[in-house]
Image 1 (cartoon, rainbow, N blue to C red):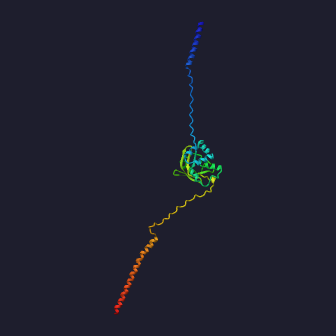
Image 2 (spheres, one colour):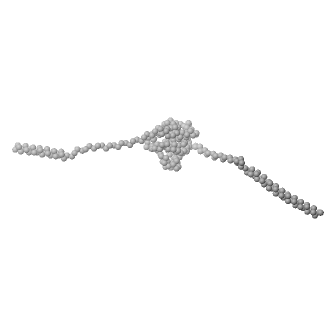
Length: 265
C-alpha cells in the first residue's frame, strides 16, 4: 500500500512537471521593443539678408544708405526682410538724384518727417517686376511709411513707372530681386504729398529750339539782285525799239520832204 501511494504521488508530480514544461514551451514569445520613428530635421532657415552690404556694393547709393543709417530706418528694413513672411521691396535713388534735388529741400524737415520720407521708398512686400503689372491696376499702394504715404504705379511694356505727386520716375534697373527682398534703382527721390503738400508746381515746358538764321551764300544772288539784274537786261531792248520807231518816222519825213521838193520844181 505504501509503495502504491508513493508511486501515485511520484506519477502525479511527474505529470504536473510535464504539463508545466509543455505550457512554457507553448507560451508566446516576448514582444520585441519598437524603435521610435526618427523626427524629420527642420528646414534650414533662409540666409540672413544684409541690406547695408547689398547697397554698399551694388551701386552709387551712398547718400540713400547714409539716410537709412542716420534715421535708423535700416533696422526697420532689415526686420521686414528677415523676420516676416512678406519680405520687402525698396526703391533706391542714385546719388545723382539727391544732387539734382533743388526744391523742396530736406533741411527744413523734422526727424520724424525725414524718417517717414525714407520709409516712403519701400513697400512691405516682395514684388518682382512682373508683379507690378497687376499692382498698377489697384490704385494707390501703401508704403512702409503707412497712412497717407502712398505711391501710384503704371506698367508699360515691362517698364515700371512711379508717381508720388511731386516725383515721377521709373525703375531703371533691378539691383537685387530674390525673395524676400527686391531692390530697384530709380532716377529721382520720391517726395510724398503727405510732407510737401499738394501745391505741386507745374512741370516746366521746355522752350522750343531756336530756328537757325540761314543767310544766303556769298555767291548766291538775292531776290533783289535778281530783280535789279533783270531790269538792266530789259532796258536795252526797250531803247532799241524806240530807236527803230524814230528812224522810221525820220525816213517818212525825209521821203515826204523829198516828194514835196520834186513836185515844186
